[in-house]
Every structure is written in C-alpha cells, then in structure tokens.
Length: 280
Image (tube, rainbow, N blue to C red; front, side, top):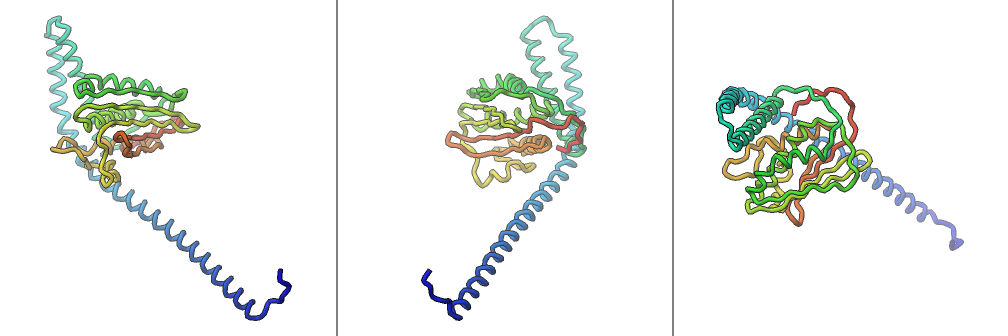
C-alpha cells in the first residue's frame, strides 16, 4: 500500500477495466455455451444420418434374408439326408458336422439381417464372458491355422459374470476376430485382453495387422462401409457389432497402435434382468 488516495482518473480506469473484464467473461461463457450447443447439434445430426441408413439397410436386409432362407433350408435338408446315407467314415462325418455348423451360422446371420428390419426380443442372462470368447476362438482354430495366425486370451482381473445376450456377444467377437485375421494376409498375432473395473468390463482385441487409415476410422461402424478390397466385404459386420454393443449400454471403438490395430469393447457388468426389444 502506497498510502496515496485513488484519483478520479484511476477510479474511472478501474471501472472501465472491470466492465471489460465482465464482458470478456460473459463472451467466454457464451462461446462455451454455443460450442456445447453446436457439438450437441452435430451429434444429433450424426444420429439422424445413422438412423436413416439403418432404416434403408433394414428394408434391403429383409429382402436379402428372405431370398437366402429358401436355398439355405434346401441345403440343410439334403445335408441331413447325406448324413443318414453316409457309411461309418468318421472323417466324412466330421466334415459334415463342420458344414452343418457353418450352415447354422449362416442362418444366424440371416436372422440378424432380419433384425435390422424387425426388432427382436432379447433376454439378458448372467454369462461368463471368458467362456464365450474361448468358444469363439475354438470355432476359429482351423481358419487361424490356415492363415498362420495365433490368438491368445489374457484375463488380468477376477472375471465376474455379466448380464448380457450371449449369442449376440458371440457374433460380435466372431466378427472382430475374422476382421483381425483378414487384415493379416501373411499371418500374425491376435491378443485378447479382458480387464475388469467397478462397473465395466473392457475387452481389447489387438492384432499385428496394418491398422486402418485414420480418415476411415470415423466411418467403420456405418452400414455398407468397408475397407476390404475386391468386394470381399459387405460393410455389415461392424455395423452389427456396433448395434449389439450399444444396445447393451456399452461402447465399441477402434484405434491404431504401434503393433497394428485394436478394437476396444466396454460392457456394463450389471443390467436389468428383463426382455429388450432390440433393432440391431
């Protein structure tokens, strides 16, 4: 303190300074408010675009599913007749069982295509997530061996059972593992890591593939979007995964890593034990 009294000019300057400071603070508040409103608007627009695409996909998927169902039923009937007339050759029976499993899987995919058009009732049950992933890995053994891919599962924490739709999660992890295999044309490694938090379970699927071009990452969960060459991808797999996980109240995302690419899935441990009408 200098002990000098403030002059009129000093008081006027301080008054102007205080007024300008108040205006600056108000402008900052308005800017943040407008920024938040813009982000909300962009988010709503994105959801509307996604909804429109899903509606179009639903109509197309229903038509495709109905067309596929008929020949699929005929193939299954003739496979059953072939199995009945086959001799006791165990190797042949093993191959027929594999064909039957794959036909059943195709039928399941067809039903999922119908789900785009018509929501289905899903009953959540208490499931062992590690068991589900191990079952999916066992289905992929032959494909991994042929592609020169190794897959390992790491569980970092004590794994609780979670409330979920078991068949839906199997489809998610099957799609993600097939994608990981497909991007590693010369073989590679897949590491699946499960960690448990207070309310969420996180599953990371890391591969040693080339990753995804950063400009494509925001679009990979959109229906019909695919980065696979030669028309080998339909662009439906990741869209189905997105629908299943978000209907669980979870999230799914992708990021590039130093080793390759990583899909991260987060699922809530607890859910209400009721039936849900899901449009995937």
